[in-house]
Length: 309
Image (cartoon, rainbow, N blue to C red; front, top):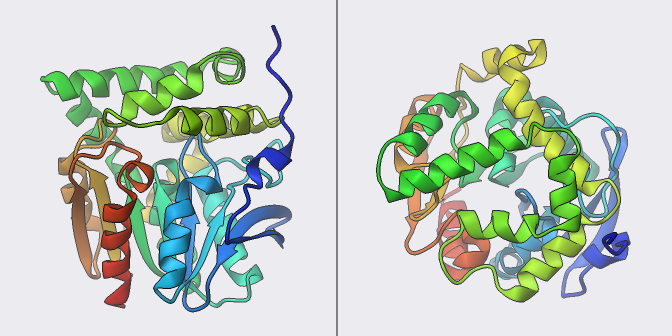
């Protein structure tokens, strides 16, 4: 049976925020915006969309920030072109969006796959970045370190090994998209990386509906396919060379203590690439999806870090 068609209106969830389409870097990006003050740009993970940051939008706006959660290229109500799902293009998208929002620079918060984008921004577009916060992601040059941590003995590592197997399976054509759109692929992926108790049924329904927006499943997987192939691609090697020098802006790294996708050691190892103020925070009881599993704790860590700058 075919999955029910989903219109982009499904991701335009109502709330205190304002929905906008913003032209930047040759595409249109959907954002949800709330508050006034220094710009904090929030980048979601797979298989989500801007709504993953709903709690932080409200809290950061109340704390005196202009909080903006975007749909990445290929997701939600943003444009879904056939190309541009590499880390360098994603970073250029974000830098251009900062300027299109009328700001000179921003604090950028990246979760999961968007954490790579956050790490790349200060090296590729330093003028648009005041600081970066990375949730549930290691530095892009520490991929081998992450893999070793996942495969190193114990129950948590067994989960990590399954996470790695899932990542490899995404390289297959067509089948991963089919499982996301027609099966329970979204729920299985969310549950595999989260702590017990999340996601709730309504979260699964929301993200399953969003992944069924035409072209989203394919676009979302293209980010992961590029990451896996980047080691042997010329653009991947160019990006690696650009990132080796590290970053000078303030860096906050956040990890749910039960996150099977990235270990604490990988976050500590990233200190070699953070030449400015660097802080690592673990969120007790949370898995990979800390912004939703433990929204109050994640927001407190983020707001406390932002207040320093």
